[in-house]
Length: 70
Image (cartoon, rainbow, N blue to C red):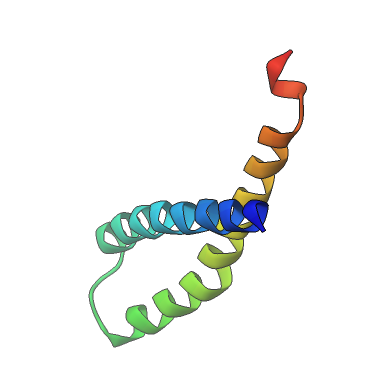
């Protein structure tokens, strides 16, 4: 239970970081209209959420392994 809470906490933190980075890149490169907003929703759903869960999974594995202490 504790590991699950920590995992989802890391996932939320990574989601917020990736969301802000994506927002800065998106606003800098693309014009502001309805089509880009719809594309942004799909990018957030299909790229940002899985990437944040993947990053949280990897960081939990790195923290729980003894490789980084050697």
